[in-house]
Image (cartoon, rainbow, N blue to C red; front, top):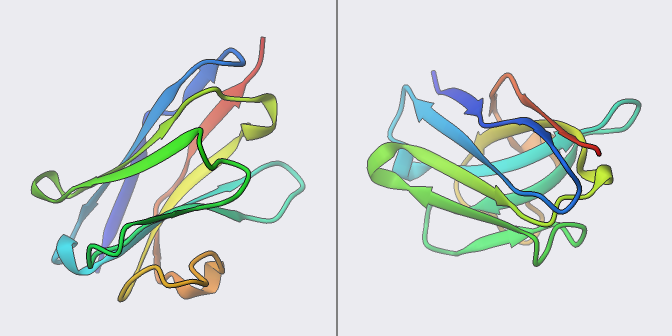
Length: 126
C-alpha cells in the first residue's frame, strides 16, 4: 500500500514562503499522480495543485495560481509544494494524495484519490 508523509508546515508571516514535501513509499512512485489539498477549519477539503506522473505537467487552483509551484523529484520519491506570498487565507492543514493515472481536467475531487498523508499544518499570521 502506498504511504505518503507530508512535512514542512509551520507558522509564517503574511508575504512569507514555505516549502512542503510529500515523500511517497510502498509502490512505484513514477506511476502515481500526486495532488495537494488543504482543509481550513469548518471548510471542505479543496484541491491546491496536481503533479502528473505522465509529464502532463501541473494544475493549480485559481486561488494559488502564480504563488504556489509544485514539482516532482522522481529520484527522491518526493513531491514539493513551494508556497510564496502566503496569505492568512492560506491557513489550513495541507495534505498530499495519490491517484492514477494523471491529473486530467477534473483533478480536484477528493474521491479520485485513493491514498492520503496525515497532513501538515500551515498557519499564516502576523
